[in-house]
Length: 436
Image (cartoon, rainbow, N blue to C red):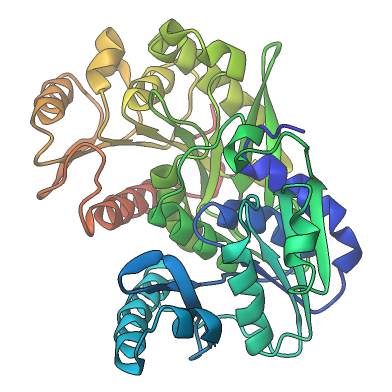
């Protein structure tokens, strides 16, 4: 069994675990790759999502050898046999534990954004990862959930080695794997897209799930969609908070997708401000293999226009203004599409974009446009200044101090989110604004 990505794996795993729906469950994802899988499981089970933070305690002179693990709430699991055989002194153990405890606390704050951990005492803890290899992390997670007094522990993964039940059978009350292939070498071999998950994506995923309405799993306010663009179907995720003032369509840049952690981070911020979002793929997987398509601004703009028409036919979009958020080359597609005579777009925001690629379309863009660029992204900053000079609509160039092209610096992406939020909320009104 091969999964397209972690989201598909999570959806399938959630269906396998549907018998738990209705129980008092807490879904715990193992950072980082297990969190997007766990999010899809939490949608199906309509349960809260949290991370299960585990830090291995490595022997001081041989850190890859674990002598125990720690978790939140002061939980600690010590392997006394390893401590004795490695002759680790109480002082050395305390030093290692102090260091790992500090790392654990920093990760918790970064991932949850100040929200308290979800309690598991007396509940069914569903521990989810994107796969099991050696099982050491999963084993520690189960023990920590047990120490936090979970009433029942379910360890669930999309893929695991055939002997995984022998390795972990005593750690959980129920073990669930969608596939246990004979030719197992590594978890990544069973995914087409097994890209690295960053801390930002983990935080955005947890924030999005914490803000979602409960009582409807993958319901109309937050659901996977397939937008029709001619004969092509484009996969996406639509989130529309109750009482939304508008919906923002995201046009990602080259080499990215609807799973972009940066776009997801911004989308979560817009959702908190009462704006709906649609993150979708502008190209099919087959089309993306041809690199010429990735940089074909006209084609990408056509897909964005077609998806906009599709969205206007959805019940969630009735009476709502629509906006575009474009990143990198996606910004050119957003401006190109916004320049169409009947576009009816209320506002456009470009993040580190290439508006110059919209060329002669720039003077006919009617939507108020915000260009956001990092001050250290010198080439793109110059291109944005040149493009701004050609715009005839209401426009503004916002420069984020110290930020580079990907806005990876501390606080940079937060600044982008605030700028985009304010621009969209100032220019989007719910009363049929922006309709052609």
